[in-house]
Image: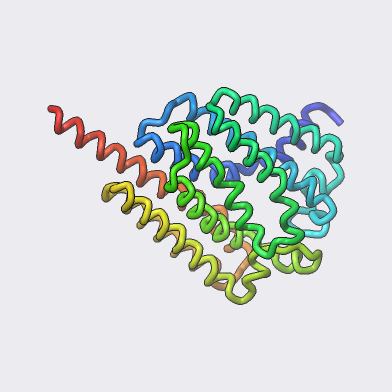
Length: 296
């Protein structure tokens, strides 16, 4: 096999051709970077976290396909993935996973001790999540911790501590992850039942749509509470309102449990995360503009 063909396979194994996972990992990290720094993040820390997001999501995809290598060939949506199709070996996958984790660690070493300590937990979460589908009834909650652990790390990197607000933001992200990954799991429900994998879509059963809506509501309620605690302005809540509208749109997509529409709802969560970040940005710009007007 030519080098270019092999690199193309590695790209697909890391899902670099499908950036939605990177975005779902990046948005909560960006929320935390901006809130922890009052709208003025350290730009070196920002770039380290964004590059780390790409590396960690890629590593997570590789170890996920390694863990599911015996299941993916039996699932319609995943049977053509590189490992499922036998195009990438176990040794290659583990080597690539190690290279990605080491690269992420080298980035984190530029940050403070607390952030480095938290990164060890983040690496464990990324490596262990794929195996939780064997025994956890709602592995999506574990995914929410793994995808949201950039939140306490961002606070640690920016401020040297992890306040209660950071853990509340992580809790909000857990509910969001359960919402969007249940939409994702609704696509594969029949295949997952057949092969014995546990997912929230199976656990929630006939109440899956209701559970998704409740999780969206909890996400927004917690973020609204954070806004009240931090005395954030109108634009922050407008961002939450837009996110609420997006969640309502997702209900129209998933209510009949059609696979294509459920997958569309999952992909569309990028805009849910972006709306919240947009509200944070506008709130910071409003505060900055008000301060400038006070001076002049």
